[in-house]
Image (cartoon, rainbow, N blue to C red):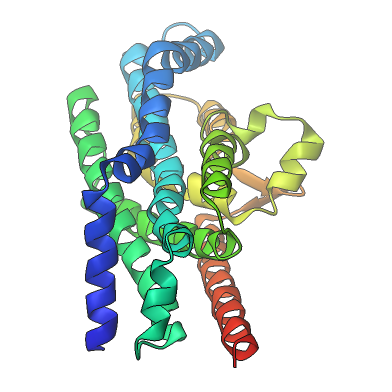
Length: 299
């Protein structure tokens, strides 16, 4: 365990010490924040307001909170995956720079080395994402706090599950990369594409029916929806309290992907959590099998 602990410390230290790697991991969340602040926030607000019948008291205030919750959850949903990929780039850089060969010459087992990359990536990503969550909580407090202590704990739990998912996914993908160019290509694709397929940049409800069904098979879709449900649960309760009809509240939930449907069957939040947890276990299992096969091939 001493070897594993030292490797984890080494990997975490290198991630935060490498300013290029660290700031690259923050690019996508920053872009998303700017995108929402300058464009999407007003678009969503106008869309919600135009759909509401006249006469609702304090409608604009509650819609502002709804948009804030959508920004909050979307930013964290993307951050959990993109930061994991950036943090896990160290695994590929060690291959490119020959550091991995030096490490495997030592008594450290390959399985321990693989585990150190996974644990250090998860740990570094959790630090960044929990920090981003703290900043988002401050933002929400300025807009108007509407979350309970249970909501906050559930959001932190969602972040943990998504980080485990992102770490396992990046570990599998990065295990096949062998050059700096491949690192850049994968980082670009993930940063640009993941936000769309998980429903962060644009709600999946806005896509075509066929694409919605395809995306309903992806675990990341349910991770984003979990965050949205827990981030906006208080808002929807407040809507009901001030007189919003139930059908309007449900329509808003549909439009922001709080309600997800798998072939017309509504997926409950408990099922979403289970799907994401199972995906974590499966991907971690695949990562373990890949490393076992590589170890056997070198014997």
